[in-house]
Amino acid sequence: MKNLLHNLIPEDIFFVTPDIKRAIGIEDLLPNYHIICSYNDPLIPILRKKGAKIFCLEEILQRDIPLVNNSGSLLSHPLVIKYINSHSHDIPHIMYFKPSVKIDFLIKAKGYYAIGNSSSLNEQFENKTNFFEFSHKYFPEFSVSGKVGMLNQLEFQGLSEDLDLPLVLQFGHGWAGKTTYFIKTKKEFTSLSKKFPKTIVKVTRKIDGYTVLNNCCIYKDSVLIGPPAIQISDIPELYPKPGVTCGRQWPVKFLNKKETDKIYDVSKKVSRIMMKAGYKGFFGLDFLVDASSYQIYLSEINARLTASANFYTYLENGLNKIPLAIYHIASFLKKNIPYSEESSEHIVGSQLIFRKNIPGAISSSTHFGVFKLKKGKPVFIRQEDYLPNKLENNEFIYIKRERKGRRETGEEISRIETKREILLAPHKLNPWIKNLL
Image (cartoon, rainbow, N blue to C red; front, side):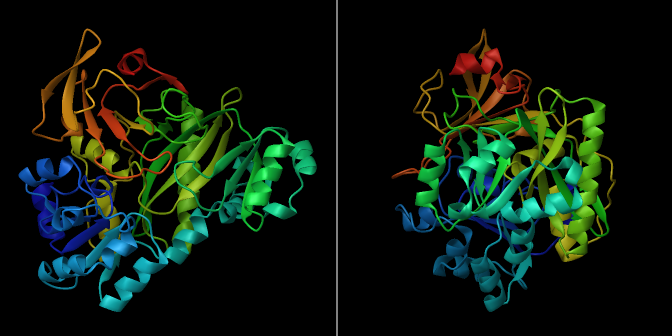
């Protein structure tokens, strides 16, 4: 596979991202793939030993750079522009995690080539209030009842009578559930309304269940759909605020074939609509599953590379499959890559994100390492490689995010990656991971 891709995709590609973990997974597969990141990370020296081409701005400046915390600001930095120009044999091709107006402007102004959709196309599908209209128009049978409106013009009494309590209130933009609020009282609703009076929000009834997600890619006139994973959330030991994403696990195991088939069917129909709008490449869908009825609801479109894309890419590599991330690139470069529309059904792996300091069995001084479980206790075994796709069943990778200075509330502090199951049931940790906490 590596030799095939080296010949098919020789272009100079620069993935620009503050966090290097957004860009990894295909660094071994393409000959001229560069990662440009803001912040230092324990993975950088390990990936460089494997031959990865990495430019880290914090390394060069040798100080904290709190202002360079988004891809647009990073792409505009003079040292980044210098690196791109000096490592390009032809037109630089720019990849990014989430589209923005600034990225669109810079790519056009500098004559670069975008490997990603525009910010306007992303906004059309990903904005949660836009999505509400989209889902009720095309998928009414899979849509959660609710209402969209300016926050100071919505009435708590009518909403609570129509939708019951708690209400689920979401802003148009947000990350990992951080702008999702579960409103139980009029006081909570009024407080939020006074704080964000002119904000357009989506208010829906709460589904008691769990979230599953998948990764998809529109390639030419086809859609490649990955198997669903369960989202790890609503576990107080990991993070107290409900609705905040703390990882994902493949396979789901809590769905039967009927529900899984519905997810694939909806995914195909969504992709056809997006395709007609001009969208191509990677995207992901979130679905809510009612815990009692197993009713499936389409809850979000992530019209971009997803938070799980890099880890998922390694798992695909472990099955010797051409990753969806490669088809994402090929869709923009108009490359002919062999493909099959069959799902990667045998994807197995879990990624757990810690968003608060959790004193546990892993030493606070450890920033990266592969550990083995022996009698339920973690034992350090190596530090020289990062290969989540080649982990043994009793091994896991621990990565601590090296971020100096003040952290935002809910920001990632560390993570665990493993082939083991993190969840025993939805919202319930497996005993082996509970022992680590």
